[in-house]
Image (tube, rainbow, N blue to C red; front, side, top):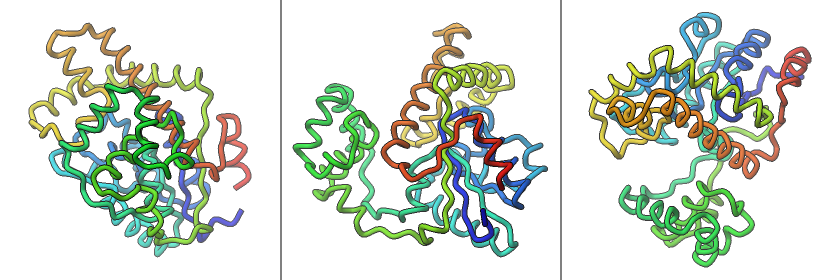
Length: 302
């Protein structure tokens, strides 16, 4: 497989071992790793975002990890500009860019271009989220199809994240999300990408998530949240959605035992992994899917 002129994308649910696989691949092909995870950009969230450790940085060059301030906004558009810049720099060194992360929207922007949808006010977006919570996904999806019939063949009936996005875009801009997508174009050609999705069996993934949650709590996640609280980050910043922040806050306020906190973080992480897999099924049909046993076989072929 000729990888010299390629851009490699590695995705998969949280805790599926993407980072380790990427390091092994980078060693074999003279690659450099670029972050494609929306929480790992924040410098103040090292443990909760499961950022690669300093030893990994010594083995292989890493980019776009832990550089952004939690108090400042960071959009998909911001990431895309930096990602394109990094690809050019890495290729100039005659190395291969390897993107790693579970943020599907980052990959969509990189491979298909960025949709220039006007910014939707946070109050408006929260209103739609409240509506979704009240109705539930099944009724909300029916309501979406009445508002935006094009969504019927574009969005899976169980995909709540995309349903909410399509609804808020149509309601606010009076134009379907799918019409906005029509005019977008990637900076790169389709054949420049090699796309890999790590597809872990559910039970095995649950075990990995439980172990990782335990390790996070043992290695300083509580201390990290204490520091985060002191920063007084505005509530509308997306970093507040990071799994573990609210759960550890409850523990610190004596509302939950540590065992309950651990269980709650694990459950939330499992739910997030499920959403990632759902999103992948609808958006990553053309990706090469690797089960754990196939990962080493793939590396040997390179």
